[in-house]
Amino acid sequence: MAKTRRMSNIFADDGKSVTLALDGFGFAAKTAGVDHAARTVPAMAEHGLDNVLVTYGQAKNFAQYFTSVGMCLRVDVTTGVFDPNVPDNMPVFDVTDALKVGADGVVIMNFPGAHNERSTNEFAARLAQQCDTWNMPFICESLPYGYPVTTPASADPEVIAVASRFSEELGADIIKTRFSGTDRDRLITENCTVPVLALGGPKSDHETYFAFVQHVISCGAKGVAVGRNITQDPKPLAVVSALYALVHEDATAADAMKLFTSLDS
Image 1 (cartoon, rainbow, N blue to C red):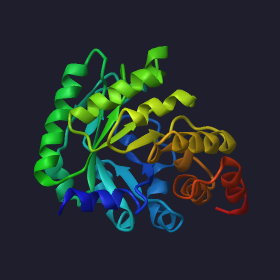
Image 2: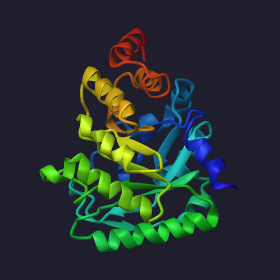
Image 3: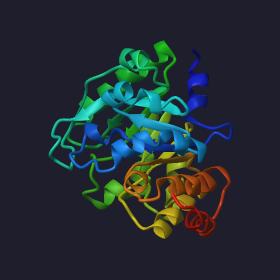
């Protein structure tokens, strides 16, 4: 299967994607709502969900729920599952495992500028080469200075832009990274030639989050990769509908909020 065909399972025809991040079990101890969300994916697909990020276990044990969306396999895990700061990551799967479970892509974290950047760069580069061999799209989650935002530089759009392009040059087909919420976020997308997905960020109220999504799309992001703002919401289908409108229909945050309020689940 050509890489472009698998990319079309991750992105809709307009080249944009509403992606649900279900892969938190690989690097976090707090995963409330993830299993329920996984079982709800078929309904989410009807409301506009394009793609899911999953662990190897989910790809095996929840496979029946992922047939109507793209599915990308998380191939790395944290070295400290009880440390919310993710002190380091390690690759435990590869493209051959993604092929076994029928994945449309793979995702791994990279930490440019961090204490462990040498190893994460090597992980990413080797994975990119393997992905090219097997025509498998590679999503690189590029996080400057490490997983948590610990310094102003960690969230500086200019720094994120450099880190994102660095990860692209290692071979990434898609960049997944944080956005600051400022107008300078355009630097991130302008510095990349591949699609950029904005990280979903911490759980926030609907108005704030919809405004953030409208912002990243206006700055050139090709979609969002959302975890807790869907999995921990009492109305996940309504959130997905609102995100679809924001990402694919260029709706305003106010329009998305009206849509969300009008739906029951």
